[in-house]
Length: 92
Image (spheres, rainbow, N blue to C red):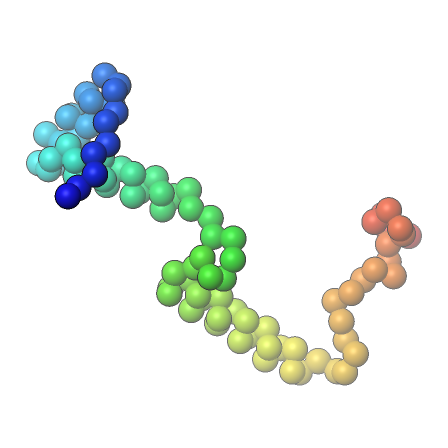
């Protein structure tokens, strides 16, 4: 059985109905599409586990390129530049 969502807003009701008529779909479909679109636009994954398959593939490609570059660098090369900053993080 489907769960129910009640939105008590004249503005939301009018917008959903207007879009429903324009798109030729139910108001439920309009609300689902709108929520899914907003979810996709505002979702910001914070860990690798949060990524979808396409995003993981993209990240894996970047990491593979980084490993390839790292393999060409001389031993001891690092990105640590702490010697350039004082204890407050300001340039020396």
